[in-house]
Length: 288
Image (cartoon, rainbow, N blue to C red):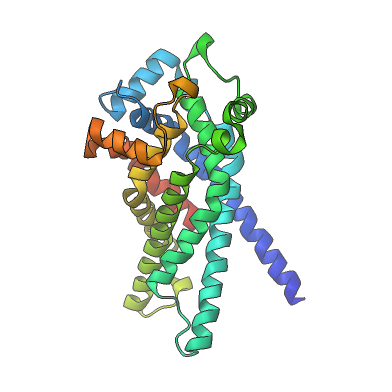
């Protein structure tokens, strides 16, 4: 009977994660192409200019380029993120209990480590999903487009340099971004939730839903502020050419070229629309 309850709870959590992920994907898609274009080109003077030119030159449907792959995969990503986080959290709690039964609660460094573990687990799926999305968003418009759809994109990326070097290009920096991002994401949320419970002398499950959503939204801002330079390098590598048209030989080379060519500002292009979408998307993920 107990196992059935656990299974039902796990299934419910999975469906909630899938719903939250799909809802988040829909909410963020309109601004994502603007972010990626700002990161990978210098043709727009601002986010507003980018959005205006995309609408004028490519039409309203351009904002949905690359939408299918994240919508299909983002629910699974959210399930992996929370599943891996809670797995690592339980392992830390077990270790803490064995060494000090009176204080099994996680330290904040352990919360960060649990989040980083979740990010690394998530990168296995998020790496190729985001690569395909970025290729679709940055390819030429109209008759000169390179890919007819996500499946065609996967096939051509794999044909260029194989699965690992082609489809999984930029995976090293993706792992670094995901580890840092989700380490900070879960750490920030847990800190705010614990602080609220302590301040008001209540249990965590007694915290109002609007506060949970607010803390989730603020954690989303912290996620991107702590990891955005990695995301810029990832976008540059995953929109780079192949063969003689390849500009970056490695993650390190991409960091160096960005620093030499654009300075510190180059690592923060597109941060505006990213932060604008981060709060509602992250708030919804935790509140659902």
